[in-house]
Length: 305
Image 1 (tube, rainbow, N blue to C red):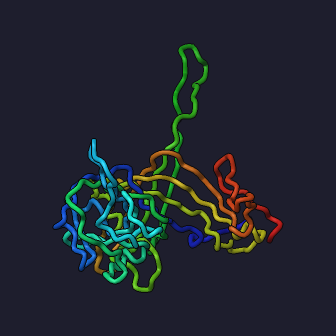
Image 2 (cartoon, rainbow, N blue to C red; image 1 turned 45 degrees about the horizontal axis):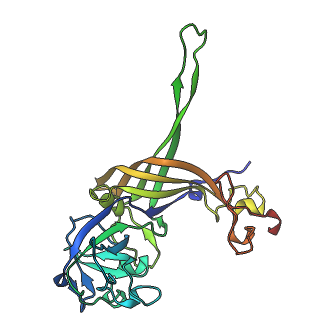
Image 3 (cartoon, one colour; image 1 turned 90 degrees about the vertical axis):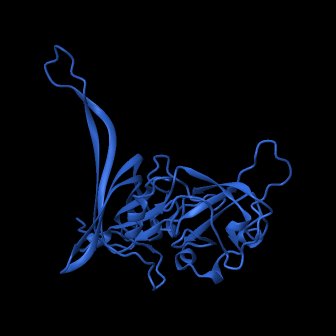
């Protein structure tokens, strides 16, 4: 029997949103010299590290090409302007925004790596929404718990000798405790900090939703007794869920580190998945992996290890 320590677990966090926000962009809102712009949105709508989709809204009856022309062509992968685009953002203390190609660049907020801007052709409406970004490891976790429950629905009829019940809906909830930190790490590691949840729970316009991977076993975690096959040691097992933050607390004590406690509930499907190492995946002719029909992971072959 394999025995694991708590270090086998880890949490990956993906920033997601299910609502959009509309505003109007004016020429005065764009500062090409500082590679910085702003538009009217309540404080906290977007935070540093978010990946957002910005789209130019075409008014009814409008003719001609409607481009998001305040972003330089280099902001797109094909070096051509389009009506919309997706970028990572750095939001400063007064709501100014800089655009970046990568999450780590957005966290650093340096002007030299920001995407260049230019004055817009005029004033026009835009729409901004959170896009699902690459999942990042949640740093400085002390412990986390995740539980699932299924309702039992009473179907007992008058005259039955025994109580009858059927399975109801599945729900999940959990709690994460982290050492509180509010700045990006200086060492270059791409990790989310606990402070993000403090911002997320206050976000009224776009909600407090996030996508979580709660690992029971990481791909690099082996049991204490090492009593497993090589492939099993390298296989990851995790819950894949969409969650809503319901409660964030912070505790101060003069004799201990500052701690953040994050509580959440799931919304939608709960999947318990496994992932085998990429090298052992069976690939299709187009080099894509084969996703299992039961949605538990990808098809792999064990004889490579």
